[in-house]
Length: 173
Image (cartoon, rainbow, N blue to C red; front, side, top):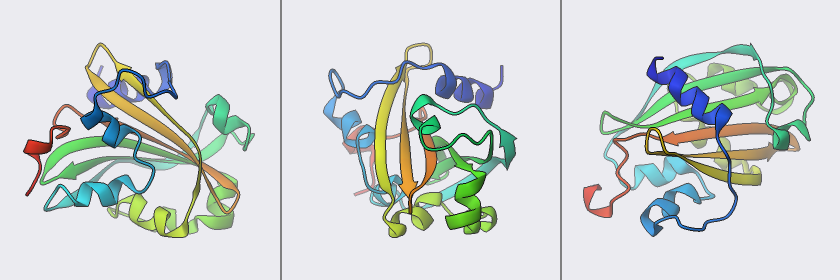
């Protein structure tokens, strides 16, 4: 199984949690951050870049939280690797139902290599949920968020890769 499929399976097959119990503070600082993760990353990296791994319309099965807001089975799915100083730090997947794209997020189709958080968070989305998981097979942490943008849903999955600098001393000064 290639790495991207492994990462997607973590998103699909995890036991998602909402409580912050037993998470080290340096990890919790990132997992439970509610503003733009991209902006937070810019405080610890000289250069943030995006590598698009997949971006297209797909048939999707929605998470239970997401399904409350949208019954659509087709969504724009954008997958990227967010890099800090050229190291792969986060694998992210964003799911936009067709109605969200058509009504409030047409710009997403043209975003290119710009981090989605820099487009999304200035529009003040409302976070409906923030969940996290730890994958014991890979030792990686992930989080997922359901957000409403002008009452239209989108879901963001973020997997902190092995190279991610959770430790404060590994960050830029």
